[in-house]
Length: 367
Image 1: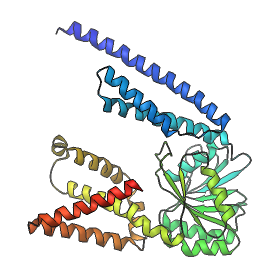
Image 2: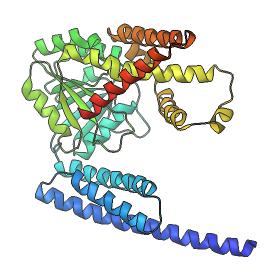
Image 3: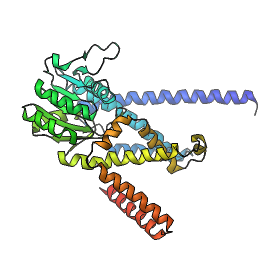
Image 4: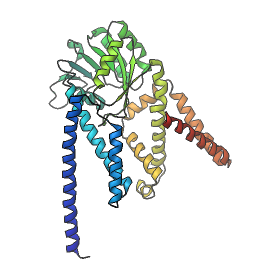
């Protein structure tokens, strides 16, 4: 094939790509109109039955055109997710829940602090930020919370866990009139100051957003709510997330850290260990990439995201959780048993633990 013919085909491909982008943009405009109708009729943002219909139609259409059905499904799942995110943002903005309300975010220039600032501002809250120092051209910055009247409707503590305990102690003396909520990943270090703040007459709620600051769509995500004795305050905080598709979960204080030791602590340390083995192996990353497998790539993708997170926060999640030794020792024991099975050529025991794991995962799917 000559160069001239190749250039012609590439130009044609560019034209097709532009048409695809134009059609996606047109689809997104239509999605926005559908979002407006959903808002006016108070319809739910997500309709799983409708999504299934769309995907089935796409797969049938792809099959008729001689295209890979799985690839078509993957593309349109991403398109649907983007559409849902757009409609969710619409619903959050239209809620206008923050009208004539204010919020102070302590630690508001951190990643989760900025997420909450954007989230609340989109609901029309008057958002103020307190942190070590302001960002460039930050007009809503408060340098010292002890020098202002804390009449905000919500005060959100988005600082490191140990620092959050100190701030809660400080708030006992400042007696804010609004609802105080911490978003810490570990709750045990905050037990005493949270209780003391509540006993001082302040309205206090502890929550745990089970997602990071890069989240675009809250469908399938969870926010944990811990009632510290003021049910009305809990319901008001839940109202913040009502326009979203996040699942709101009630949890007892004493259950939180035990469960989080598995959900966060165990999953974090497995991926940190995986990356540690690779980084200390002496094998070049590029060489391993050329030999990648489906399982390796999937694990590497998760571990890479974990390794990019705040190491100080991840250390706090391991160190400050009283249940961490239980999961860490269980992990160490499991690894040692697997090593022993391999060394002793005990295939039956190896098969047994994998079968046991499969049964557990099947139960999780059914639940």
